[in-house]
Length: 359
Length: 158
Length: 115
Image 1 (tube, rainbow over the protein chains, first blue to last red):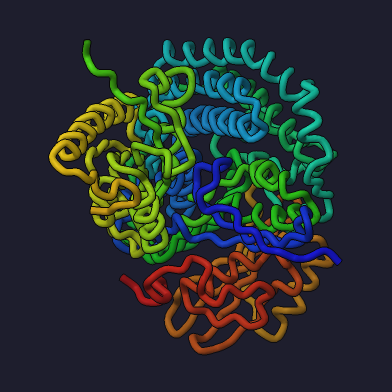
Image 2: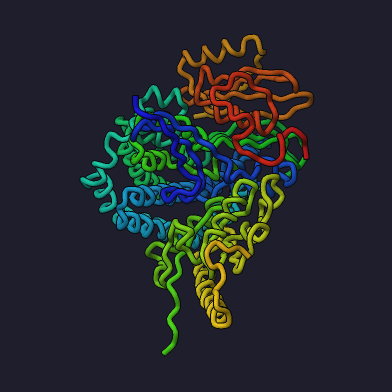
């Protein structure tokens, strides 16, 4: 039998900008087990609901994570609105959807860049991040912020877009779609990328369900599950369908994310075409009382927001189950049996967001 | 002829940031902002770094890591705190697992506020850090002229 | 599609059997959440199948021990460890038991007391 050894991975590792630690149990070069240990970015944000009132807490929820910021704000607001029975104006719902889909494009492009960087494909990394700047410019023009832009509030949104702005977004989306084509070709057709990703970290469908995978990770294994189908925000009016792949390997996960970018472009255009006029928020009176589980589809997968209120301005409990929390157990499964050199790439293909996970 | 500045190498560490500042720091290295114009490159090795760039407030988990990274860097070194959390603790200040800004653990030279700090502000901070690095180097050189021994420059912590 | 979202109160004696049945019926474990209530905790275990969501709500007294569901759903280990560390819920037979060293925070069970 080969000799067992334990190799620490992280907390500071070049492939991830965030600190996470894994103890890898090795037999020669093969990984036989992995024990994750987190806690480097734990801040205790869920506890802050006791100190901030439910309207102020939106800003804290948005700072759970800088990449998924828009989604967290929206998920929190929608769950509080459900508890209070507030009907948000249609225009606000459409605006939320447009910003949310733009966030998805920005998050996926960021991930594609990091993936290229992990493979050592430096020019592809630069190319992806160059494209991403266009989306950040649109965030800047519409909200004034680049990554954390605080547009959601309980009862609607804080900023409106005029028709010239909406047309500008539609134009940018068209431009980006044209610019995406070479990127698409390289990620899906390039020999180097294929040889690095194909057959690496295969997650079969039954394992994905048993281990509780979510988002692109689950859809790449062939399960059609996308929470946007539930029709929160304006998704009920739009033509959404889960993007799936069947192979379940790293290449399939990359493919799903690439196709989701195209789907988001289509959704943004559709929402801009259908957006109604009217108010962007309704006044909120009184305090929430009750509880609700809200599910929304973040770029990384399904996130669950639980709100329990007791009729005062402070909530009793706010719980956020982020996509990465659910994706860590399947990732640990995937690592068993892989080669040590493949570990960084497999960890990256789940698109880990550690500051979300630890809150 | 004027003296040339050194091309400083930068070490980035995420103490307990929300990622917002981190992706902006990475953004500075990519085509749009490109801090490599100033000779700055991002390194993963504290032994070769001149500037320590930290995002996020400090908690009990990351405090020893930050201290260790700082002590491993050779003199002269500059510490740059990016984002309001790294400066004071920011919105997370009242959380049970946040100690406060980076200056509760190590001395900070330059503060870059903002939530998230914009790339322009980060570049401004880095350019200031380059200048400060030159000044610190000059000071060490002057000291070296006075004394025979330059004193521990490696792994020294003041 | 409406958000199908049901909360079922459940007692301790049928809890484990229900969880096993959920697994046989191919429900996916999506979420475990602890809430501090007077004299104990409310543990909520949420499951999804297709787009349906069911939450099992178990009331636990403060000094009562519950057994872990990691034997049935191995992926529960992170969230159960979290509930044990932050709330002080006593969970028995965790498959990967971090023994309150998941987040390694200074303060013990910060969510146990209000304020």
